[in-house]
Length: 423
Ligand code: AMP
Ligand code: GLY
Image (cartoon, rainbow, N blue to C red; front, side):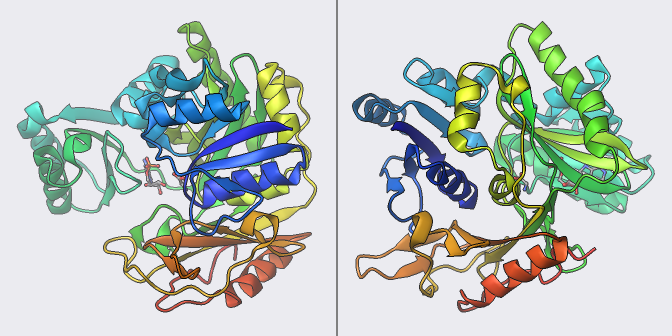
């Protein structure tokens, strides 16, 4: 059997591990994982930052493939650190600017003509200019901390006062630390948001189903932005995916290749579809969470096949097949998320089968903020706790399964949105 190491600890990583397990041909390890992950998934007690330990583990265990889930280790250079030992599914550090610097990503898009909101960029040495720009602008206006801010670095400002306050707190470091020392201020795009994903191997790429994420905490897209409260896939009306390939994916990959560092790994493009035309809101150098939880269970090709095509750099020839029509995922979080999530809630019995994922034939649970105490009981560690995913022949059927699954795993103060995939 070949061996796969997944780096990360969330529901996205649980979904990756589950998909790998189902191939029946991979031994699956997750570092560090979380307390909801069960055998035959092997948890490895190494943190995402412990490169020397990861290297030792890969050598001793003879790991063949490494999939890096979250952005932080990719931005720190995990591909560069590990690729001499195993096939690493992640981009080199040099390309992580696409996610870790919204200012550089904007410049890249403008240079190569990728459709995106027009923007001006200020760093903190130009605070006075930024403030006078904000006083003289029309609203709404979108302001983004340039660096990694865990999905919380964006304000849709409706009047100058809140814009000025955001920019001052961003420049001072009070709000996002150094990640806020540069801001991107851009025009507001009205439209429908979508997430597009590819897996690229340095030569070609496979286009994965597009997904929709629900970022706001509350029903009707109200409340603060979160990491994502649910989603569904596929979410590509009409010929959207063709348009996205042609206008966004192909020119992006072409430009990176021309720059001398072809893209490899998952690329996630956050899009606003404006009258059927795609505009890039952001690039991410990884799979989305909760998007991965609804995309991966839909794909019929085994993880082993996908990894093989990645290794031989023939993903352009891989036919991505879906074995179910729709997947809907609903995220359960602890009370207080995202501002000040409560912790320590006792969790009910979670699934044990298929690595802790199988609720029933077409319902899965992917755990995130879950820890197992020495007494064997599981507790929430705060924030997003798990995602329940339902599959179905229609969006409605998939949604019903997901919500029926949610009923089975209540805990104190649990919050979830009741309107995921209701169109
Ligand atoms: P980002 O991290 O850049 O994807 O932004 C976070 C969220 O802010 C997005 O998911 C959108 O909902 C919203 N957003 C970002 N940029 C814009 C824009 N130019 N126009 C409208 N909404 C935006
Ligand atoms: N769900 C959005 C993200 O993973 O960034």
